[in-house]
Length: 88
Ligand SMILES: [Zn+2]
Image 1 (cartoon, rainbow, N blue to C red):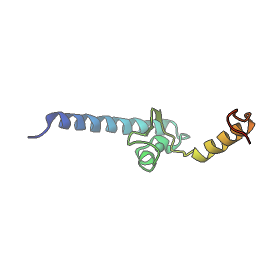
Image 2: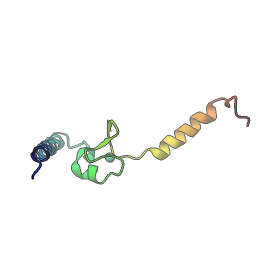
Image 3: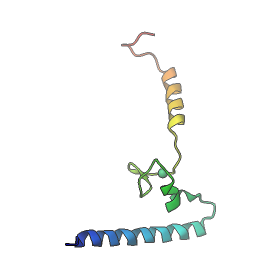
Image 4: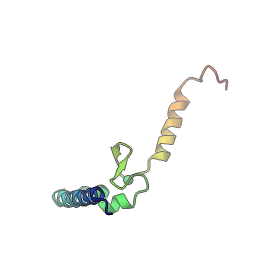
């Protein structure tokens, strides 16, 4: 027996994705200086975000900042006084 709710949800999702792609295409027409980070291809090529371009609760710009965050964290930690439970 076909799952009618699943069919309706799939049709709704397809319609929403089509509307999103149309909207993004229009945005890029109006803003040629904008990068391609919102396009379906950019989302598909990114390993950091989900199928909707979100990384957790935030939209993804498809840039991996793990190394930069680790360098910044190390610089901050180097400026902090030593923890009282650790002796250098
Ligand atoms: Zn991404």
